[in-house]
Image 1 (tube, helix red, strand yellow):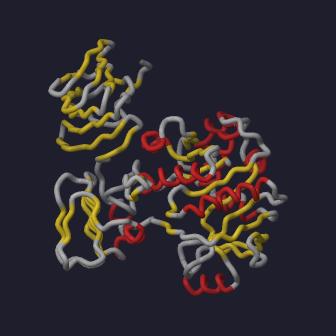
Image 2 (cartoon, one colour):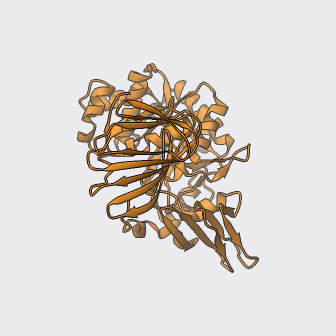
Length: 436
């Protein structure tokens, strides 16, 4: 089975745990079978592989999310990188070309496309494989998974099937309605459109070549920023006549707000937190090393991270986005392919960061033009390379690198480093990478 997972998100609605790099699908809030916390991305990947271990999974995403995807799924995962945001049609075309031209998947093969972040159970992943097989053996060009509505939602578009059979031809689509219209659609047998569909690779690539002048994946990638911003629904789905829908009864939750997310959590306190007996339906999610105490709160979410602190009525938390957009500060925490970093102090001409390198990993060999850096090793062992000179490092060692100096650090076991950046122009763009 071939699967494209669409991974986007601005990281605004689940602030302060999310940011522009760590969107909701990367936050580790759910316990797995081993009682370890996992993200929605990890949960989705694991369950697809559980149903079909031979599945080829490709993540369609922006370059800002590549490091965190590699951190959580490993460096062998297939990633179709969008050079810039161009909506879902260009993203899906690019990922489809990636499957054919890079992964060498035949044109007659089918692929399932779905979002990376719904909260679903194992029967959903069984349905994905069933949808894949339906597409592979069907005369229809598009096969959709329609979700049986559990309430008249205003958040979803609706699919109107021809009949009430498990698999039916699609008659028409309806945009996101008000509650009354949603009730009318449901009475007609309408299904939620969750953005899950399957097609043969040649079908989408033939459409793409009619709309876009490109030769192959590399050519399309190089032209990507010139492409029109258009959704897959508008460009393909709503124009296709040979389209069918497979009905699915599923426990489906879109965990896009703190209100819906806390409903799916296994526990009321993550991290250091205390609630007194007067608290009701209150959740604490704390990534800081200091405790959070809640007294007498009802229907409240308290979330604390290095990005900030949120204290909100759960229903009101749905309206967080415009307020978060007004907050202007550097990203304070990020997972990287080699580990993670957390900003612990910001001054006018300096930035102090806690760097954690996972065992066996290393930073890229790089330099900075406008800042000096000082590394203080606080735990673990490894090796530093400064301008080609290698030295072993251990707790207590201090290494200074002047601007222009090429450097990297390699972890033998988990390595924690306090990095102090000093300079009048401290910027993430001030970095030049080298082969080493």
